Length: 254
Image 1 (cartoon, one colour):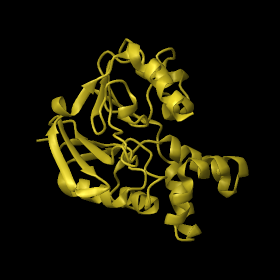
Image 2 (tube, one colour):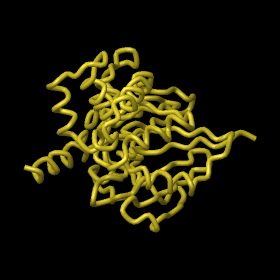
Image 3 (cartoon, rainbow, N blue to C red):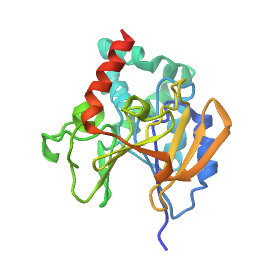
Image 4 (cartoon, rainbow, N blue to C red):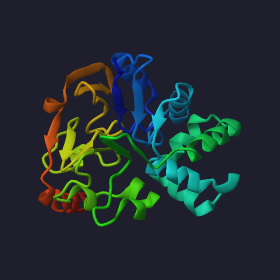
C-alpha cells in the first residue's frame, strides 16, 4: 500500500506551529511530505524551519520569500538593494533567527539554491504561486512560478486538464468569499496558504491529498487544532470576482 501525499502551506518561520502540525499528521516512512515554499520570514524561527525540512529530506518548492533571500546574497555576496527589499518584506525576523551564525545561513542558502520552482507529480502540479494562463509551461520563469496572483486566480479555465495545481503564496481569505482558515478552491487549483503569520488567521494547514483530509494548527493558540475533510475545509472561488476583490483590499490598505 502506498503512503500518503501530504502538502503543507506557507510556514513563514512558525516552527513551533509546524512541529505541532507534524505531530498531528504523524508522517510515516512511506509518506511523502511536500512544502509549497515560503518557509521563512515574518515568523520568529525561520532557521529552525529550514533545519527541520532539510533534516527530514522533505520536498519543497521555491517561494517568493526564498527567492528574495537568494537575490539578497548572490554568489555569497551582499546585494544591497535586494537585501533592503527582503528585509522590508519580513526578512528581519529571519536574520534574527540565525543568531549571528553566518555559517548556518550560508549552508541554508546553498540548500535553497537547489529548490525547484515546481514539481510535476503526475496528477498534481506543485508550485508556490500559480501559473500564467497565457503562457506555456516552457515560457514560465521563476517570476510567474513564485509571484503570480490575479491572472492565475481569475482564469475561468483550468490550466491543466488532468492535474490539480496546489499552491500557497496568496492568503486564502484575500480571495472573494473565503473565510480565514479555509482552503480556496478554483478552476483546477487549490490554495493552502491559510495565513499562518497573519493575525486575522494564524492557521497553518496541511493537506493529506491521498485521503482528502485537512489538518490545521493555529500558530498563536497551538492547543487549537482541527482535522476535517477537504470538502468541508474548502470554499469555491468565483474567478470573475477575484480582481475586484483584490482592488478592494488594495484600497483598504491605502
